[in-house]
Amino acid sequence: MKVLVVGGGGREHAIVEALGRAPSVTEVLCTPGNPGMARQARLIRGDQSPASVTALALAEQADLVIVGPEAPLAAGVIDALQGAGIPAFGPTQAAARIEGDKVWSKAFMLRHGVPTAGHRSFAELDTALAYAGSQPLPLVVKDAGLRAGKGVTIAHTHAEAHAALHAIFEVPQAQAVIEEFMVGQEVTVLAFCDGERAVMMPPAQDHKTIFAGDVGPMTGGMGVICPFPVSDADLRRVQTGILDVTLRGMRQEGYPYVGVLYAGLMLTAGGPKVVEFNARFGDPEAEAVLPLLDSDLAEIALACVRSDLSADQVRFRDEASAVIVLAAPGYPAQPQTGIPLHLPTPGAGEQIFQAGTALHAGQLVSSGGRVLAVQACAPTLNAALGRAYRLADAALFAGAQLRRDIGARIGAVPDPAPDPVS
Figure 1 (cartoon, rainbow, N blue to C red):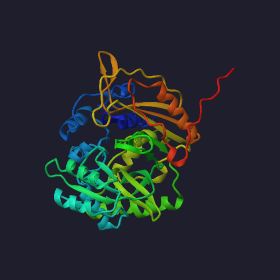
Figure 2: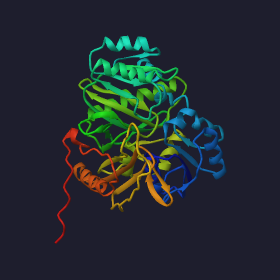
Figure 3: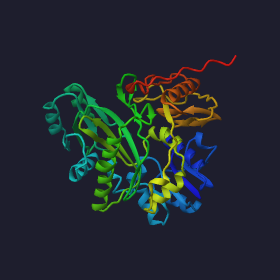
């Protein structure tokens, strides 16, 4: 089948790579794509509006469209594709509210008994400031809209909370959510969903802040380990008490959820609780999880679209995966662009997923904040981390930022380089 992928970041590069391994796929297209995808996909310039994507899918006679980023989903690209009779993998605009409107999402969780942090939502700055000033520290302040994973502040002082709220309400019609701070390990569980069933992928852990030790500003993600160790009991709670309940609630409210549901969870002493839902593959979680996929991504996506997904269609290799993100100097505030990139050739079981890259006069250069997602698989997590860090060091560019503590929260240590053969 011919598959069109919408998006141009590291997540979409990972999707394209997985489709390239899928026996059912004869051709992959990507709009707008990035230079790293050009070996596996035909890149087509264009915007990601519902009308443009639908026109492209019709012109190319695509058999399936997979939408990566959150913005086109929130804009209704799936609705437009469905209206044109094109199989499209992703939630409708109404279902994508679970990510795009955190006030609505939190209210949905309360209506259906999905475990989450205690919270309040605000549409006015003054009331939000007064509430924040009365709460124990630390507390979590969230922009209710789409912020590409960066609209969250963990405030350790009331001044930090007030500054975050002022920044949120600089935008007209803004809303904010203020949550209690939950204690525990944070983990991401991605699930393929067909409206009725959710089939989990291996749990992963992202590292959100820019600096080692989990300090500094929030980013879109600086590194991932997969699988993250989650007990069988907690996985059952995630399946039955979070994913199944969420899909049932979405059906009951009239917008069945089809696509990848991202459950950002905190493993608290009282069990897993939802930090937030996202309506698509995580980025950079996708770059860690998809290389482990041992079945056909296109067939899985079509099964979701047709509402006939089964757990035996989704198979992952029993290995570990690690991702190290190389970010531009100045990221996340003002990333420097135009930095020349010189990429090494990855070995077997290794990938360099391009995210913020472009070609300028034939030279690959940085074009965004998170530039590269360097990934490696191995039988153990320590081995995967060792391979990923060695490849990341070979791919370093001027001023590159990377964290040297990916996996350290659970005591993972990168294996050293093997001794050379004499």
